[in-house]
Length: 99
Image 1 (cartoon, rainbow, N blue to C red):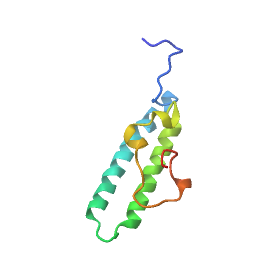
Image 2: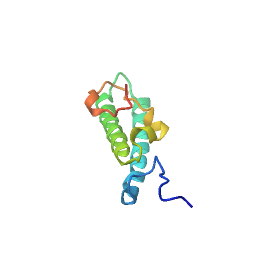
Image 3: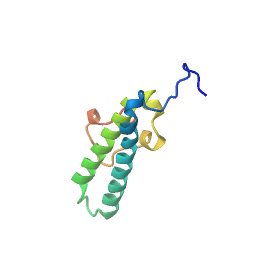
Image 4: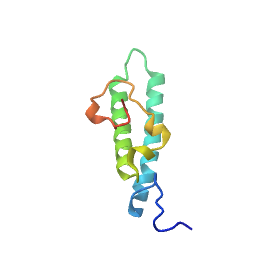
């Protein structure tokens, strides 16, 4: 049993955020699959706009998950931390993990 002072980093900051916290990874995974499909189906950048929209959705998921995570960006799942957009997007719209 955990001591009251022992904190579990990487989980939600508050128990009330658990459903949203878990849903962010589901939305993220679904967007990644959609993006991969668009990239594999793309010829001559025909899906560029759709890919940018999906990348923005992914970016919002990462930012939201980091806000909910106790410990912030340092405790995001590796696949979220390593994600980068396919096409260039304004840096203000991207999570801190993207260089």
